[in-house]
Amino acid sequence: MRIDIITIFPDIFVPLDVSIVKRAVDKGMVEINIWNLRDFTKDKHKKVDDTPYGGGKGMVLRCEPVFAAVEHIKKENKNSKVILTTPQGTLFNQNLAKKLSKTPGLIIICGHYEGVDERVCSIVDYEISIGDYVLTGGELPAMVITDCVVRLLPGVLPEEAPVYDSFHQYLLDWPSYTKPSVFKGMRVPDDLLSGNHKKIAQWRKTQAEKRTKERRPVLYRRYVKGEQNGQKGNRRD
Ligand code: ADE
Image (cartoon, rainbow, N blue to C red):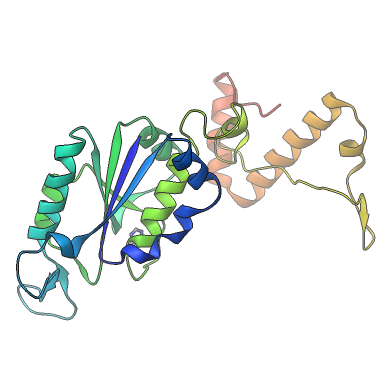
């Protein structure tokens, strides 16, 4: 897969150069390119933004360099899907990450300042928000989307790992522990120390359900519906 990110802050993408994403890049499972939007401007000041028509505060990202960048990248990977990161977008979640991981490529336009010229939306497949809060720009959302998608690509994680992720089957993760078995008087639950695989699986499932029910009731209702419909694989044991 190929991911192209269009930004006015190309130096900020250090987190994509470590850990699992870096390994995936090194193994050739994903190619990540960071493009500086300024390189697609035609004026001598390399102007990427301008004042909004109708007046008002802030600056709006201009459409010409964004179109030029997307057109340039599409010449290299014409089937890429185009994403615009914006607080106005659809909320990002694991299902959307899965869908995006099956595309041949992604072009992520990092929104900025007070907004992006609306005409950019005519070349965008997905407007995506990573949460109901406003960040200073779309770079962090672009990294969140990239990280989430890359770890779902075949071969990036051990085969069964994504199945056990939180949200994979509408359940949050169960609690995890490692050594020592007692720390400051806090004991690891007996079932986890029992060595009995059935007991451990049952304990984890119960804990995941309890947590989800308490912390994310809407998610829990979806999980229960899935269980009632007998959807394969929505048990975590
Ligand atoms: N840009 C600013 N805030 C954002 C958010 N929450 N999601 C996506 N893009 C954004």
